[in-house]
Length: 461
Image (tube, rainbow, N blue to C red; front, top):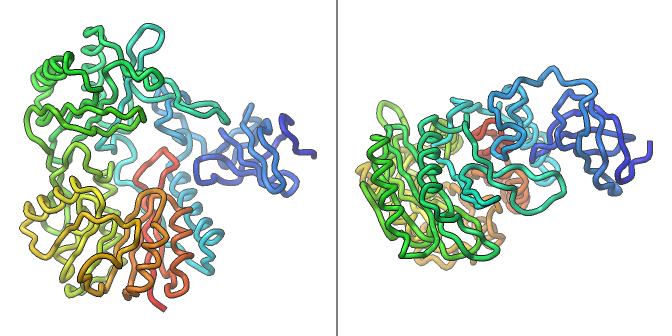
């Protein structure tokens, strides 16, 4: 069978690649099929044909997989929030574990690693504690919701669709979003358009915590003539939804469509919300500001942090270096198990929240520093030799100089946390001259999506 662009092939999907596409073999060549699930037999149209692989899209399902299930959301297939809601959850979990193992083998060069069983999310619906909704003005109407998926091969942002439901977040959060949409439409003020750099409404970010507190973060452009509108909206929401304890209005001047406020200019209620993660007989408490990064699945965060603790095997005396520490969530969770925690993070606001959360938990063996890791960590004055390094970098992974700095510090253990198995595998290979990967465990924080978190233990040779 000849595999060329625009040809139609019939194939059976064997697995899922990282990113959510099905993987089939045609004449010994790997074909990545968008819209195919493990066990499906599909008729697929080839979009790209390379020497070693091809990319395709499923035109029709010849025989559906027994692993297919009925999606629960009316927007599935159009909304870009979910990718595999139509795949049995146990199979989702198995595929994510296999993707991590494959990346560590192919990219990381790890041999004979027996992966730990993947950890499921405690809740597979209504698990998200933070949702980012986008505004858009289209066809003379304001829209607020989530972006639609684009056809395979198209680049850019999908149009915003006015979702009526979402099963990944709390139903109350959807109700708040509906109220904001109604208010903003009635204001007759247009949404921001990045190409023309005009308009006002940009993003709505909702965060709720396990103790029932809700924070509303409204992001707009800088137009003081319209600042009365967010103030009016805050009063409407806090009157209608008693759980809303914090309303934040921030402005963003950059054209990039990121839900991040550059300057907070108005607050009603608290400046933060408080999150609790169970640990032992008590809980660990965190103060979360509008732009603070925190795991979006609170139940999953407990599983993730418990895995880090398990892999660390702490005795109560270790000095732990916490790299890319963010708001100190991991270090604060580990504080009562170790002798000392030193955290480094480039974001000064996050470091401020780390200190605040340490104080909230009456912790005095943690310290946090606003330091860029782009140049490695040798430039940090009086850095003590760590027993364990915990590293939780962004999706792009560790900077190369940071990896080399870790090799020179040579702690007994490295506990690496990653939200992308491919960059984790690359970093494992960078450290392989001195370290052996002895354990790895996928922790599912994002059911029905292609995302997966991984914890890996590297021990000094």
